[in-house]
Image (cartoon, rainbow, N blue to C red; front, side):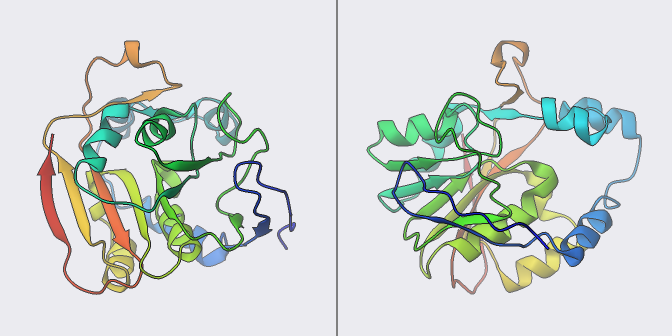
Length: 231
């Protein structure tokens, strides 16, 4: 049983309520998806800028900040609700761009890194009561599918969920089944590489070996996704 938690959200005045979505099915799906990649494990981790460390080590260091230009590119293509929830805000690289464009941004994260709500929020277990806006974030890739599912559960019909994800998110048998039931409306592929920097240290990452895209869902949409190229 997951501990239920209610905490006032200082940004919006709404209440948070516990939502348990990390059930055995989700964990089994994650284990299955981890088998999608084959090949040299060392080369994969080197390319993605990650490391094959323990969960404890990765919890401390596995934080990748998103190049703010990625947010500018998305806003040039899509219209969003005046209220945005950035549920993995980190140090605010995406939230700050949204605020500069006039959006009201609710910024939360599992670990407080000096920006947003100082009260930690586990997005996979909690949501905002009566939230009526859109959700935009770059989720931890390990839990990307769960983040998308939770985001779609957290928004109202017709509202949008935009996730900045590796292009390889399109792969995987489990994700295929999810896409069939929940197709994104748009996929914006970055034709030039954008950077996600470990611990927000962009000076250490002058270039990127990873292809990224913005995946945009509109809750209730059924149809074929449109793929466009940006950047």
